[in-house]
Length: 524
Image (cartoon, rainbow, N blue to C red):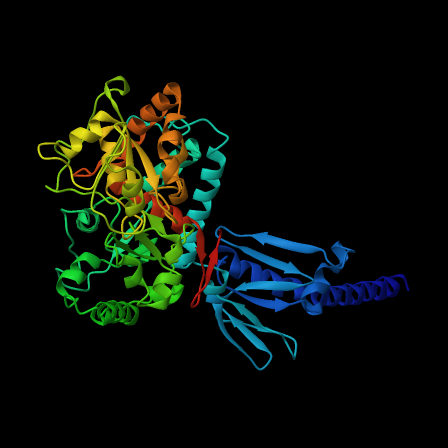
């Protein structure tokens, strides 16, 4: 009995042991499957491409005894990736996946059963990779940082500069201007369209009062710092035509027919719009033209978006002719008779200037006849002439004068403004609707006098009311801003070429360009 009991007990024990083993085996099967996943995936798991399985009870049940939280997770870290087992999902390297079909998943040659209706999602490398920024997004991100830096510069310390540090009331915000200029030097890129043939395109006069057209085109095209040959890197796009050359070679003299010039501009814009995507992306908002000829504004009207959206750098900056200071650029008319500055720069100190004011010039436009009517040969202090007496030097008279009168002619711009600055003579601007050059940076009221047409009869009294001390300050400021109007070949930092370019840079900072046609937001 005892032996029987022992046998039975033994059999019972054996039977019990077998039953326990069976239960343990049943319990371990899910663990083995999971372990197989982990073992296979461990050394080869990828963090960039995964197949995702939603929560499955048959995978989760083996972990239920070790966690009472339904959202508990078990993670296995591999050398180059991570496998997640949770109530939500199991991540499996897609590279190991051979097949998913008929309720079976084959991973690295091993078959595993899966529920009847699995929800399978694949996360590919493309969707998991950080989104690549487009050209415009890259550019706009950089410009956004520049705007923040310029704004912060107003309240910060001025950056040291070996060449020049703007200081004084001649600048609206000297620190902001300086920081903006430095950012331009570091980042600004201009794409010059190569289409078109000289002399109308890629050319321009380098002498006469239209000299800055040709000089800017030439300097821009040979620039290694600012010109880019890759349009994808460009902040702005230059339309390199010369209005002065169009008047010379396209316009039929005395025909009063603007049609040939208009068609030339229309055909050119259509050509570059059809050949490149950039005009249509912004409807011309990141494109610019430059013209010193009086017909510059009229030329821009040939294409609606050219005058409406594009940056127009114009000598003839007349607000009554739709010049918009927020998006257009006023730059100076410089009469380079020889193409150089030789003999134009310099003048005596204020104490050696015996003449109160001086003007000599042709009678055209609505303002000069009024000036001559009131002051021609009427006062020794105000030397106003239609024609200079023989033997009298025009530039010598400017150097002897405290103030130089700069009345508008047919158009608002006058080369006398720069001539006065060159000779150290305080300019007196007599004009209507004129936006002086670089007014975005320069406070003209600090170094010039502005007189309206109706105040011409009171001109002497206005000038006499300026105290000697105030005049000396104005004279000193004229000398300080002079470098911004000087033409240099090759160009020098802060000179007229760089100031024109900086004004264009500021206008580009004034807009944000997005995707799609006309995706432009103005910040002004």
